Amino acid sequence: MTRADLLVIGAGPYAYSAAAYARERGIDTHMVGLPMAFWREQMPAEMYLRSGPDWSLDAAGHDSFEAYFEDAGLDPADVDPIPIRVFLDHTDWFARRKGIEADRRVVAELTADGVFTAAMADGSSITADKVLACPGIRHFAQLPAWYDDVPADRRAHTSELVDFDDLAGRRVAVIGGRQSAYEWAALLCDHGATKVDVVHRHETPAFEKVSWKFVDPLVEQTLAVRGWWRDLPATEQQAIALQFWQVGRLTLEWWLTPRLKPGVVTSHPLTEVTAVASGDDDVTLTLSDGQLLTVDHVVFASGYRADLAAVPYLAGVLDRVSVTDGFPDLSPGFETSLRGLFVTGFASTRDFGPFYGFTKGCPSSARLAVDEMLR
Image 1: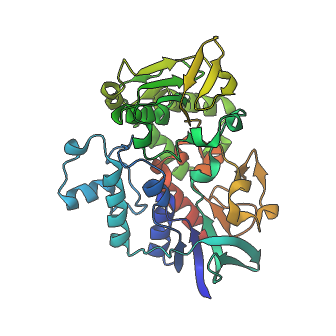
Image 2: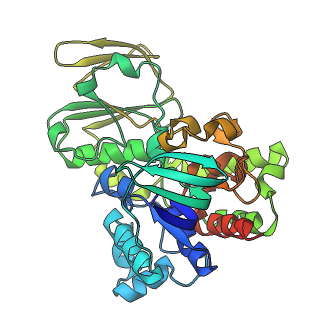
Image 3: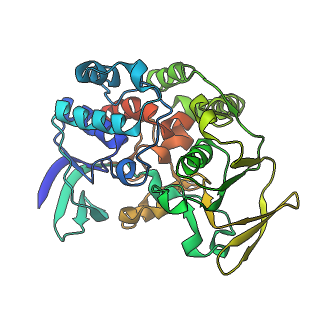
């Protein structure tokens, strides 16, 4: 049996950031999970980041992404946009710099009885006084009601489609209109898809350079004022969320434009699927404007929706965790209603703001959660 003061469940950006900062603050910390597994296995190898080198994992502010570029001898101008492989190399570098090594065992179930016990999939166990859960978005894929009407061999959520070679010469419908929808459309073009129809309920996004600098003072406010986001008037929350939507959702990356081949990609704004009919080898989608799309494959770029009950290892404690609309109810330090259990990442966005669903929120969430543990 392994024993630690703090068990960090997960080995993605939020977990790395928190585990490093907790160790630096003197907390005996044990991190479990497959290092950056979602990024390595459920994102395409040819994907690019929307963030720049000014975003960091280091809550202490030393081993930043910019420090990695300098240490690796890379000029940010030469990797703009940043390939996912560069970000993954950076996380490996960060782990080495911080002396973090993930225990690759997987948690099957977490229970709490005075202390927390994590029963591992291999039959072993880990006990800890506190637990920080960093559930990745792979648990939270959002799918439309008609998803099951499409045969299983002709559909995939974007988190499942990372290899595009089998779709060369095929007709594909992409459901959704944000970054992943159009980036997957670009990747389909890169790999020789014959036709790509992108269907979404909002206007066609703009493709241009934007600045994410407006997020910086918002994150600083989160650090400066305990419970800042949750205590904001609803009108101010809505205004910030609208700005975030316009910059992060309705404006997509400029570098997608030349890859969206005009003869291949067709956008269907302000529409949605109203009916599905499966043929022997294809699927016909009826759109709300009356158009019919006959395709070979459907890709669901329908995003993610928090649902803490969908995280398997939390089943043993979920009845003691207060949840609202799938989100855990969190203290200003990311602690759940079950004392000693903390949650960061996408599942914290209701109480901390939409920017905590991105790597931008890693260092500040680490500081807030760890400081709460030491209060």
